[in-house]
Image (tube, rainbow, N blue to C red; front, side, top):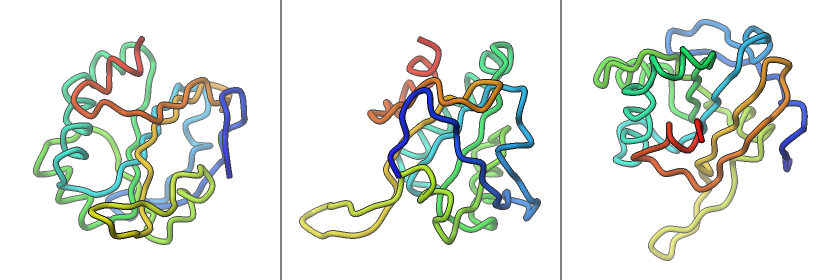
Length: 149
């Protein structure tokens, strides 16, 4: 599925790092930063998550809720949150169903090998559930600036 700015963000149902159900719908009325990243504890994903952590209070003051999502398990997410003191939930999408809804799962290539994986993408969703921005070229070191500009 290919989403565009102005589209209604697809609702999803999954679980967070503690196994609690989580949906996009429960954040209606708030601005949502939904960031898809490949894997917990890898250099780029750690840099991106820590940049959002370090600017979390600024994002809250702007009215944002931050949700990270990868195909990692809840246990891996709990460990990642604990290790880096992340203040926001991480969604476990082990079956990649949410990735499929957002078009962030597909064939990638590294070192000449092809594999299926996450396209690092951030969706900024307004209070009514409409996509107001899609960031495909994520600067992991300074992602908050990309969101707030």
